[in-house]
Image 1 (tube, one colour):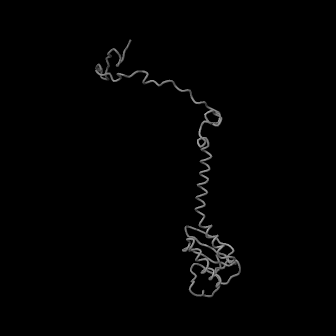
Image 2 (image 1 turned 30 degrees about the horizontal axis):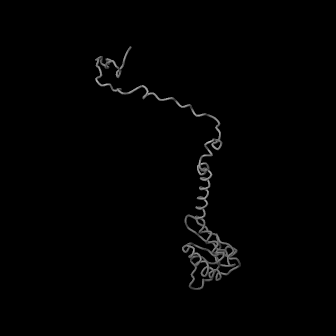
Image 3 (image 1 turned 90 degrees about the horizontal axis):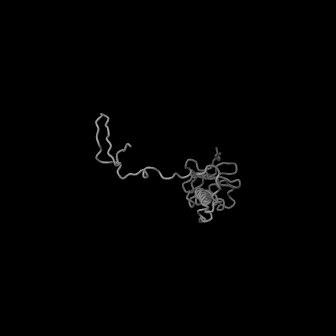
Amino acid sequence: MNEGPGTSGEAETTAGDGASWTPSVDPFAGWSVAAIEPGPVAAPAALGWRMPPEMEPAWKSRRWPRRHWRPLLALGLILVTVASLGVAIWPVVRVDADLLTGTGDQVSSVNVVTINGQTTVEIYASRAASPAQGMALACTLVRPILERDGYGGAAFLVLDRAGDILADQSTSCDGPRPSGPANPVT
């Protein structure tokens, strides 16, 4: 029987050039076949349909959050989304509500438009108003409300029902507004 290195007998090894030599140190000493070969192979997982985890006996022994983590995760994501949208649109809703309630019946609608980071607040007067009434509305109500709500530097337009500009952010509150035709909104 042919015995290799690491066994009880010494074997002669031939190098590529034909010279023979005997190894003095066994590189595989202490190794066994059991250490190299894997143990019993586990049966492959069943392919195809399985019973849902809720039907398994171990399911009821799990804690409630561990059994229901998917709906809890979905609920958490929905809450985070709603909260972030609320934080994002709350300033606009607050300005709209403050202008509508703070001016009484003088304002019929408010539009807050932000394009490329520049915010414009459009305030529509509820009745036919003159430029002097638009200036008074801008100076006494609109500017203080916008400054209080953090939109002091925002552009604003006070418009009549026809869409003509009565006052804007460049309107001077120190003296009377120069008379002239109203500017149509383009």
